[in-house]
Amino acid sequence: MPPEGRPLVRCRACGRPLRDRDARLWGLGAGCRHKLDTRTAPRLREHEVEQDTLPGT
Image (tube, rainbow, N blue to C red; front, side, top):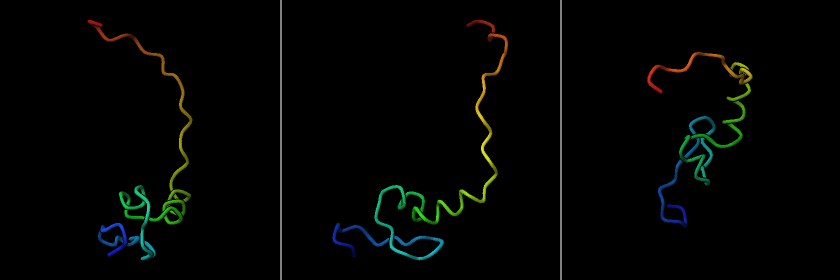
């Protein structure tokens, strides 16, 4: 067990021990998350959408 008393959690991609909270939640280290993020589709730019107001508001 690690010094903090929590069970050891390993990265699902590379198997290295995960130490920070986000890495443990994702199950992936920061480097592996970054590698996966670069392979995803590009994010669309956010823009305002013109629409009618909802009835009753």
